[in-house]
Amino acid sequence: MILDPTQWGRFLEGEEYIESSACQQAAAFAARNGATLEGGACDRLAGGDEGFSVTVRTTGTVGRSLIPGTESQHATASAKAVLEPKCNFFPPEPSESPAPEEPFEEPTEDPEPEPITGLTCDEEAWAIDPDDPELPSAADLFTVRLTGDDE
Image (cartoon, rainbow, N blue to C red; front, side, top):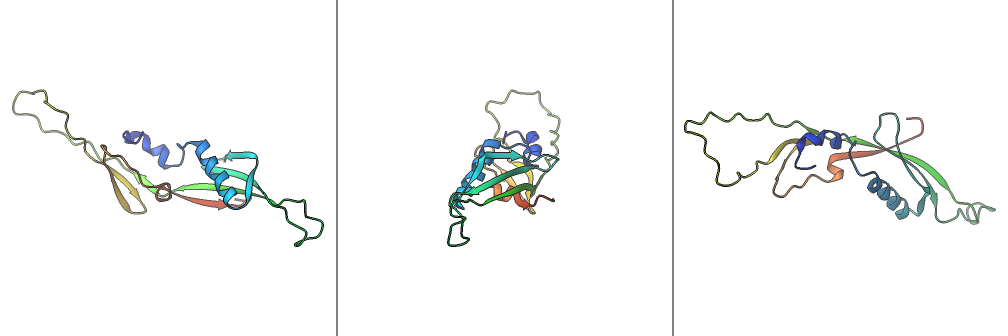
């Protein structure tokens, strides 16, 4: 996909990503914060926003020292993470080759591929080398915003 810029639009809008990978990241984030995904669920948002909703449950209990009678109770919380694109991609116009003055000759070797340009993230222009393609990181491509139930 990276070498076919015609497919970049949906990816840069947050519409083309590997859902299982995003949910694994949500589970890892919850684990780093002493929680698990309730029922393992990670649901894609409906209604036009790109992102996920999760409900997490603490691995530890509330505990008697905080509130008597809660030593076996776990806290739960729900969150929605919305992906907001930070990048635009405007492919360069194809250049027109001047008409050859001599009869066309078959090239003896493949021409060196041109860098892919037109990707801008937070006003920083990127040029992608087709021989060593590397995109900006996810943090460069998107902002993840946590929202409440009423948003």
